[in-house]
Amino acid sequence: MTQASDESGKSAGPVGWELYRSYVGVLREGSLSGAARALGVTQPTVGRHIAALEQALGLTLFTRSQQGLLPTEAALALQPHAEAMGHSAAALVRAASGHGGGDGVRGTVRVTASEVIGVEVLPPILAQLQADHPALRIELALSNKVQDLLLREADIAIRMTEPRQEALIARRVGVVQVGLYAHARYLQAHGMPKSLADLQQHRLIGFDEETPFLRNARKVVPAWRREAFALRSDSDLAQLALVRAGCGIGVCQVGLAGRAPELVRVLGAQFSVGLDTWVVMHEDLRGSPRCQHAFDALAQGLQRYISEAAVFLP
Image 1 (spheres, one colour):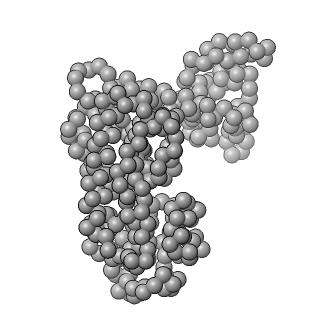
Image 2: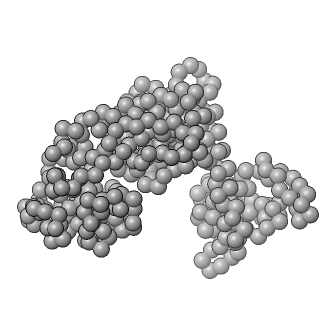
Image 3: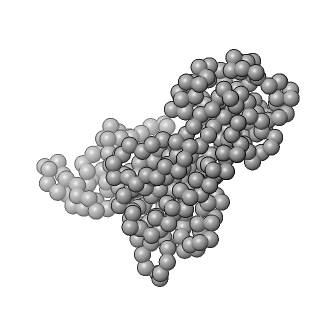
């Protein structure tokens, strides 16, 4: 419960989390009906929650328009605080899941990673982790955005950059090497580039929006920019699928390409980017068996992946 104040500044009584939950749902979905579907409740329930929250806070949170419910300035100002409450509530549930019900490692661990790592690398690691600890449940949140562990958006994160925040436990597991690759079918039709300058004559696959990786890659290949890409997507998985389909030349982790004999390294001696890789969690979770076992398993599994990829380096 949180305390709201009336216009005089006096406490207007506690405000239940369910009201904030509905408010965040409407912010995300843009309508009462969309929030109701997302939250698994009825539309009138969401409407009552919004009205009760507005009354308790003494604020107008939404205005109606042809596009749906539009958040007011006050609603947008409160959003990060309400979302932080949601992350804390979810973390509380995960922490509680690890207690009671017998001995052993149990409960829920939320892991965040990039799309490619989450889809292509983590599944066998997580399969072995759950085989070793059958009572352990895993939530896998895939995003190329850095999740804030201090706000408990996740318990454990796989990051391709060194963490800078304090109060985090971080273990460096190695360097994931990335290179340029193309399907053998594409190279047979268009030829193998002999130099970085030759890339201008090829169909390149890359990001639509500017990213830290794109800026890093341009240090090696100045022409590696949005305007040069014939196929653009901000999804790492989409880019990988385009390379595998023979659409052009794109970036791929060396370890993943090594699993696919049809993918051929392009300009291996001239283009190579290393991504420092870390497994990270909040220091408060150090004493949690569910998080510690998952942390160790992820670190060991990623170290194996990086070690195995070394045989495919030029």
